Length: 326
Image (cartoon, rainbow, N blue to C red; front, top):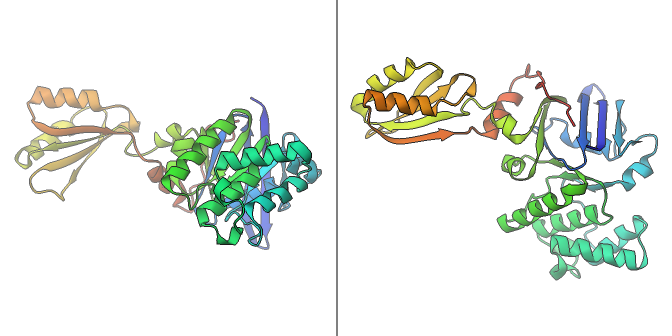
């Protein structure tokens, strides 16, 4: 795959604060990378360095092989950037704003009209083109910001919270648009909406305290959940102790937890060692022992649990084995 973004030991200090601490990361054409981290993790600072709005203290950022510091104009030509908050000129209309952006991007004549028309159609803002941007809803402002980011059909898209403020239908539309554009682009999405990562990203990285802590596909990260392949089952309270004893004796069982919030049934959560599949062996055991079960379901785990586990501690600095892969 063609490497479109390459970060090497990228570092940024603000006085004594090290906001970004030696990040190594590459993103290839065709990838949609979810860039995750808690508030203050260094996400926006990293993207501002990639897009040339901040100068790194150390390390380098390459966009399509171009050093962002050494040749910022050439690098920025290859980037479409939606900043946090989608800042636009509020006294302009979307029509005049996109015309201004097209001029800045060096588009003119038929090419300019075609680019604006295509961007307007893709984000569906045709009905508000002549309204002042300051009068638009948060969702429409976000869509205008997205339109300017894709206007010049750049090979790299950097999107900071692209669906913030959008309703469910608009989110679905924007996610579909990202999928379509990703075929020939490298797309980086900074978001705190974890469902967005599972819905649209082919890969995700997690940073905290300026360090890269995890890198993998959403599925790979979910498999790190302590509840990956856990089984939830309901049994009658009068047999729960016997069921627990039998389950705990089963090879591969990590733990058995009881949910005590129900009085008419006992809900058990059975985890496996290392997240290995345990449902078939558990179902066979329950049948062999004659234990009656009223509900039985397997859980895949949750990305938010993995996110909390990775980012919560001051010493959570172990990078996953595939960190930095393209």
